[in-house]
Amino acid sequence: MKARDLILKQPGVEDVHWFVGSNAPKIYYNSNVGRESPNFAQGIVQLRPGIESNQAIQNLQQKLSATFGQALVLVRQVEQGPAFNAPVEMRLYGSDLAQLQTLGDRLREELAQVPSVIQTRATLSEALPKLALSLDEEQVRLTGLDKSAIAQQLDRALEGTVGGSVLEGTEEIPVRVRLSQSDRADLDLVRSLSLRPNSSSEASQPIPLSALGNLNLVPEEAVIVRRDGQRIDTIEGFIKAGVLPSVVLKDFQARLAASGFTLPPGYRLEIGGEAEERNYAVTNLVSTVGVLGVLMVATLVLTFNSFILAGLIIVVALLSSGLGFLALWVSGNPFGFIAVLGTIGLIGIAVNESTVTLAAILEDPLARTGDRKATGEVVIHATRHMITTTVTDVAGFAPLLFDSTKFWTPLAMVIAGGLGGTTILALYFLPAVYLLLKRMSGSQLR
Picture 1 (cartoon, rainbow, N blue to C red):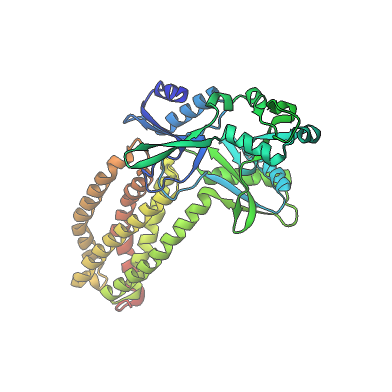
Picture 2: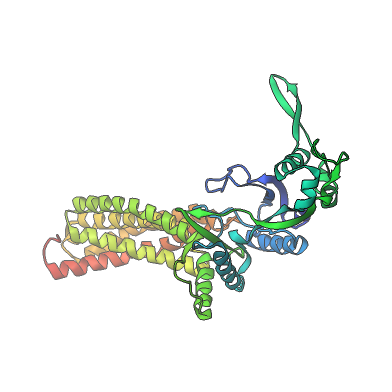
């Protein structure tokens, strides 16, 4: 509730919804679900329209981290692309837990020194408090109790025992009787719990737990994670909003190499996070695009009855994708999964415009033979239609360029930024290369 009040006071925040003990429901296609823990909560912060999301995220991260130092606070944006737990992630494999934790702490220390990293986490460094009872064997024997009897009585007092049930509609709900929450949370009260001695022992009065041994809170490994049957320590790094994970990962690997870090025999390091998921998604996408590309090339070859002309259109498409990447780089937008989708769309538009221009040249009897004047007239005639198409396409993507959420900005920048150059390629580069090839071949292009 304190975090909620602090978040709502920040400029640009409209509302916040909290889910305590588990993730929020799957509200987006790449949302992570399934995490349940009593010491975990997730909040969904909604910003007002027109607010710069990266700056708002950085401000929230600074405020919450400074105010709630006893908690690990992560402020992240809902992004496009595949889901991942952390943008920068390393998986350390090995057999010995102590050695895994030592190596993981070393990696985590190096990762924390990267300027853009705001928080780090390692699975083996997470510990949960556990009540450890060290019994005095002699005192236990005098009471006639044993470890099992003591454990049973403590379980009934702390975890409770079913003492009846109540009916709610058609459902019978058991009633569990146990100590109050405040008593269970007080270590001194737990130490003073009274245990009933064995009926065969000389003692007749209840015996306080503190008389039988020492009770202390000790850390215990929260979970031992395995992947493909091997023990791992996962080191996660969370970065500033607007920073590319690939840049942070490259910086971290350079620092690691400079420090002389090496793994002992039997241990290995694997890169995960955004890099792994992006490569996996792009590989799946490219595998599908490959089939579609073959079909596109076959269609072009059959349409123009020429491998050379089909190859010319493919060259224009590849050059247009380079122009899209250039627009993305100049604008400072990150290259990711959504930019790859925009590149595929740009290639499709480039193929379409190139096909229109080349078909117009082939339809003119003089231009088809390589006549420069006739080819120029055909291009001039097609210019109006091409420019009209380009302007309408850019105008259609323009609203996404100014989207405050930055979701679709990379896609719109690749397409809108690359379209101008694509039109120039279709109107000037393609006819010029066609005339050059026609002059070199002197006959029909095959």
